[in-house]
Amino acid sequence: MKNTFTALLFIIALNSFAQKMKIVTLDQTEIEVSILKKNETQKIIKEFEGKQNNSLRKKWTARTFLLSNKKVLVEFYDGQSVLIKNVTDFKKLDRVTFIKNTIWHLKKNISYQIELTYEEGLRILKSEKPKRLTQFKNEQPEYYDFEIYEMASVQILYLDKSKESKFAFLYQDLKRFASDNYNIEAPYYTRGDDEYEMQELAKGNTFMDYEPNEHSIYPKYIKEVIKNHHLKKIESKVFVERFWSFLYESENGYFVLINAPNQPNGAGDQMQILDLRIYENLQQVREAQANYEIFKEEGFTSEHFFQQISDKFGAAFPQFTEALIDTLPFILNFDSEQLTFDDKGIKIIEEALSWNAENYELFDDWFPSVLAYYGKFYIKNKGVGKWKTSFDKKENVWIPFIVLEDNSSAFDIFNFYKELMEGPSELKWAGDYFGIRLNRRKN
Image (cartoon, rainbow, N blue to C red; front, top):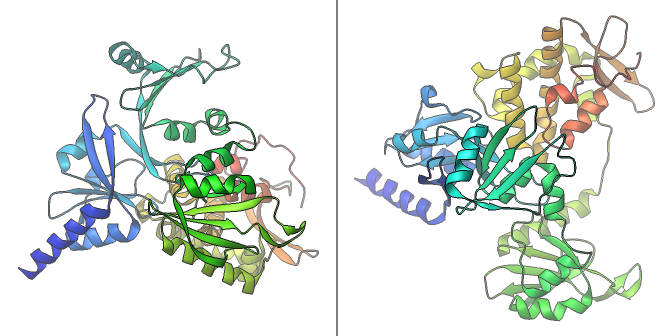
């Protein structure tokens, strides 16, 4: 009885705080799921005796669990998950692909999309008659032609009309669509002149989807910001950077930090432009203060790309590659039997990396292992190359790379690092698998 009561309380708490997402399937069925954070996911699996069921494993997800309350939990590579009402609803989501948005200045929320045939896209266009979004235009339709429509459900219907490959997609919304299409992201999120965001902030726009939610603003807008955000000053001399700020609380529950305009700075005692930051709750403010204190103590440090690998492995990196590869399932949260050195295996690792890309603190953990994996993938699939290390006397670091028979590098190791550091990337592209970048250097 006690366990049942505890479980009931947990369900009530979960329903109160879990983020809901409505999914509209291809046949217009609406299915609501709950998005759970990493710690909530593990609690649910434990509380409801989740059993992993690989026969229900959804493509591009870490694993699927059946729970004792008949719900289905789909876990993602970053440890988050979606909770689905039952197996029936789960099967209705067969063609739905869960994905994380990656627009650099916005929150990396979980979304979805549905891949369609071109014919299916045309049928939707005919039956639903969605609104054409004419602001998205193509300058070279002879090479790359498309049409974009907004459904009544706010889903985006994308029709690729290119001669070589016609296809279609349904995206959850414009953010998901823009996240998948850089050529659309740039014009859609570049609005107005330099004062556009300042004017929007003055009107009361909170930009709550921005991450980090930080803006520059001229002092002339502050009175309007305070008025239209309904702000009350609650603290002074708050530091989250080298200049101090006033902390305001909004009647709507969020908090705003604004630089004090009168304080010593590089231009004198009057700040010409201020930093404005918006936080969802007070805890976020305190965390920002704590992080700044840590930064002040530790300061800014820089190091060579391969400094940590050199310090840990030195010239012996090739001897540790197998052990490093074996850690990938644990670091990137996928099952060890999926660690294969074929196209399917490399795609799983790429997908896992895309889900973990915004966790910059994790980069130093997974990069040596991904480098080791790609090196083995390259050697195994191309049938050439071997590991080698060289010592850079100037930088005092050991650098690992794959060397070919002519003593040239198989790919640019620094470009490999740069591509992965900057965000999700195809490993074959980062590692020049097809020899597109031909400026190989002798070692």
